[in-house]
Amino acid sequence: MNKRFGIIQGRLVKPPKNVLQYFPPNWIEEINLAKRLKLGFIEFFKDRKFNLVCPFFTNAGFKTVSNILNLKKFKSYSFCDDFFINNNFLKHKYLKKYFEDMSTNLKTIKTKLYVLPLYEKSNLDKKNLSKFITKINLVANILKKKKIFLALETDLEVEFLKILFKKTKNIYLVYDTGNRLKKNINQYEEILNLNNKIIHVHIKDKNFLGENVIIGKGSVNFKKIFLALKQINYKRNFTFETNRGKFPYNTMFNNIKKIKKICKILNYRIL
Image (cartoon, rainbow, N blue to C red; front, side, top):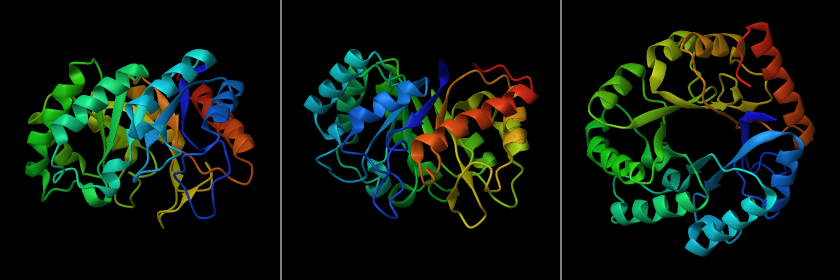
């Protein structure tokens, strides 16, 4: 089993046209597909806005997912809360209550890592950094009580991330190989600088137009990415958040082969 490799929910099925992040109606069947690929876990996500298909808007929905995971003997290691992409994190009126409920529900599905994507309505940048610090600390403390790590997903530059890390506790970073791609950034050096603050990796290829493309068709240098991860002795998990191609299952099968080949060349033993 590729126990350290997982997949973000929805990437093994065909989505509607021009939809990238997609919570599929047949999400239970997707667990079967992930198991067939010998993946170690699935990274569920909460939709940006209420969606009847997505079970993560109710306590009962989390319990249903827990029952299914137990039945299928499969894991949910990480959880990505896309809700805050469309809803301003800083202006949320009931943040404490939201995360108390969320942490309890995440414990129900045995999630170890909560991913907070700070984009769009909740975009984190150097200008609003100070406004985020208190609230991020609040969230981290709530999650810590349930033994759940908080990992931010953000494009914030390394120098400002280091300021954030100095002023917060128990805060880590999801290194998204595609989203952090920029022409003026050396991703190899960036990973070395961030070092043990990287707690999770999203595997994704993009081009410099910002388009999510099939692994190997974009501008991400995966050999250098994985060489850097080897240098910092990264031993945690990876989630494929990749372009599906025409045939999502086959694309994912090939993605796993490509990444394993790179790791073999680098003698980076991650499995």
